[in-house]
Image 1 (cartoon, rainbow, N blue to C red):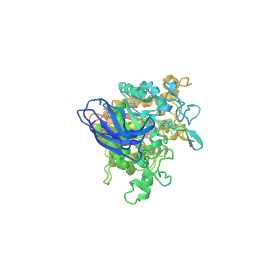
Image 2 (image 1 turned 90 degrees about the horizontal axis):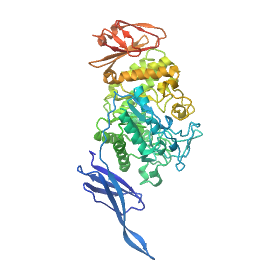
Image 3 (image 1 turned 180 degrees about the vertical axis):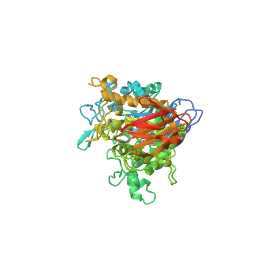
Image 4 (image 1 turned 90 degrees about the vertical axis):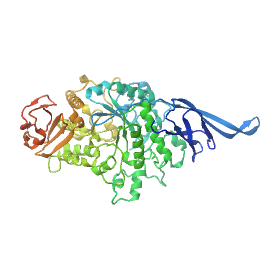
Length: 597
């Protein structure tokens, strides 16, 4: 690695007073730390640039009482452990605005290996598809079995909800016992959950995805761990976790962090250091051993599994200086790596604060990309409000007009829904024309588009009574399913129309420099019609969205600065030729994507 330093956590019975020795060319011990818990040592190593891959012994020795016959005598006791240095051979692919990300919740997508559905020796030994709150048996092999489905759809990148072990007991939430099938309560950072197939299955998936031309983005959780994490049974030190005199929950508000003008320290501390929920203990990012543990794990993950990018859960609740350290460590080893953070915020300034921005403020984030929640909220309003001053399609226009605050808005991850949100098709009242408009906007506006599994087949539902309603199994992912939505034959006519709509536009986008990296030029919505262009020196694409209930004729003179030199176009969605660029017929509630030539 470019960083030659490595910190090992050594765990065993009563290690205090132990001397540590390593005899391996290029590996030297810089410092040994004894901490509050005598069962831990932290060992700083230096790995010289010329060091060869291989295994070496870590020898611990100390004087301890040993029974010899009837007597206790003091003797030197030695213990050895083996450590391996692997060859560095991973080369992550860059994820950027050329990509189309597909979000998969592994437990709910497809069951490739029913033999790993449940294990009697785990804290939650159940699997039951009839219960929406329990595990359903989806796994990594199931995802691997459907790689061709993703490539057909036009997807280039898979984002998986966390795959790391969640050996958590079921928890009582809202009166129902629920499994940690979602994956956000880690219990062993270095183990992929057995119920998903384990480390080997994950490596196989990543390798197979790369062969198919697909990239893998992993979900990171730095803010907290599961209450059943092995470290918490015997913590190295009390302040491994954020400690309060009485239980303190985070406020879930971003304003106390962003409010540099009028804010106070009390609200700031509650937001930053309060626990997310009682069964997800908050990690203390002011403890340098904790931060090294998390950062080294992130680097190890890239090298060991070969993943290509990161989505960071609950970004705003992490200590922000720690997040900069973590981002910088990844970017130092893997320049250009895509790292996008979840901040469920309502305001553009808040969203910009937590990412690379053009704001003149004391704290400067190094996060390359935000999950674009502000544009997500604007999309829901744009499609559900009647067109008016500042409403309807004006929501898109106004939000995008504020992109000047981001260092690179083309890296913002845009989306219509995800595993924590009401399903897009339900939010827009199951209106198929609005569906097409939303999907078309997602795939033609700036940013890195992300689609939630099932949106392409009109999966619907609200989070009532729980998130489980928007995390239902993908039909056809389990042996014996009555319907198989992975195939055209298993989908209804309208589901096929939705799938084909996504497929056509996503695959066009794959080969369109204008939609991938082109400049966005938008025009103020007028008379219920919103027009924007994506353009490079070689290609220009015009998008026309109508919110009117009647057909209109659009005078194209207003767009002369972007139409100069073009005489005709082709509608990407239906293949029709647009022969007259002086006036355009705009059907009611329509979307047109026109490649100009």
